[in-house]
Amino acid sequence: EEEAKAQIKQDLIGFCSDCHGRNGVSELKNVPNLRAQPPEYLKAQLLAFRSQQRSSSFMDAFIYQINDAQIEQAVAHFSVQPSALKGKPAWRGEKWPGDMAAGEQLAYVGNASANVPACVACHGPSGIGVEPGFPRLEGQKPQYMINQLKAWQAGKRPPGPLGVMSAIAKSMTDDEIVAVSHYFAQL
Ligand code: HEM
Ligand code: HEM
Image (cartoon, rainbow, N blue to C red):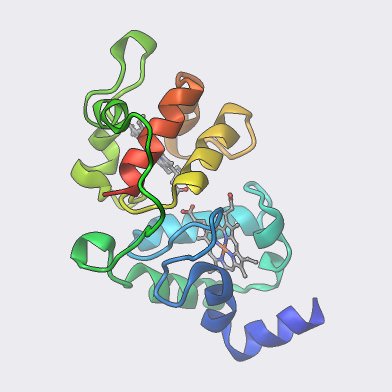
C-alpha cells in the first residue's frame, strides 16, 4: 500500500500503465483498454470507483489515494491515445471461433423481440461512440465486456446514465453477450 502510494506520487501514468498499458492498450485479459475513450466517460468511471459506487478489487486497492488533479492527469493521458481505428492494434487475441454474425446482427439491429436495441445507436457505427458519456467498444477486450454485461445483470455495476445498460444487459442471453462482445472486440 505504501509502495503504491509512493509510485502514484512519483509516476502516476507509469502506475496505471502496469495494468492498462502506457498507450491505453492492456495486455491483460480482464483489464480494459482506456485509449481514445471520451474524457467524460473515463472521469465518470474513476469518480464512481473512488466513491465506491463501482467496485473492482484491482482498482479499489489504490483509488482512494488518487486526488482530483491526478484523475484529470490520467484522463488527459489515456483519452488522447490513438484508437484501433486510427491504426493502432488493440486486441491481438485469437480470432473467436464462435458465431460472429450473431454478434454483428445484435450490434447493428438488436433483438426487438427481447427489447434489446441496436448497440450502435449509442456506441456508434463500428463502436466508436456517439456522445461524450458513451464509451467506445471497438477493439475493447472481449472478456472485459462480458464481465461488465454480467455485472449489470447481477446488479454489481452502477446502472450509469438513465440505467440503459443495466436494462439492456438484463434483456440479453449469455450467448448474445459473448457473441456481441467478440464482435466489438475484433473491430
Ligand atoms: C478499470 C483507470 C490503475 C486494473 C478501469 C477503468 C478506468 C481505469 C477508467 C474503467 C474503464 C472502463 O469503464 O472502460 C485507471 C487509472 C489507473 C488505473 C487512471 C491509475 C491511476 C489500474 C491498475 C490495475 C487496474 C494498477 C491493476 C492492478 C483495472 C481493472 C479494471 C479497471 C481490472 C476493470 C474493472 C472491472 O472489471 O469493472 N481502470 N486504472 N487499473 N482497471 Fe484501472
Ligand atoms: C457502456 C455494451 C447498447 C449506452 C457499455 C459497456 C458495454 C456496453 C460493454 C461498458 C463499456 C466499458 O466499461 O468500457 C453494449 C451492448 C449494447 C449496448 C453490447 C447492445 C446490445 C447501448 C445503447 C445505449 C448504450 C442502445 C444507449 C441507449 C451506454 C452507456 C454506457 C455504456 C451510456 C456507459 C455506462 C456507464 O457510464 O456506466 N455498453 N451497449 N449502450 N453503454 Fe452500452
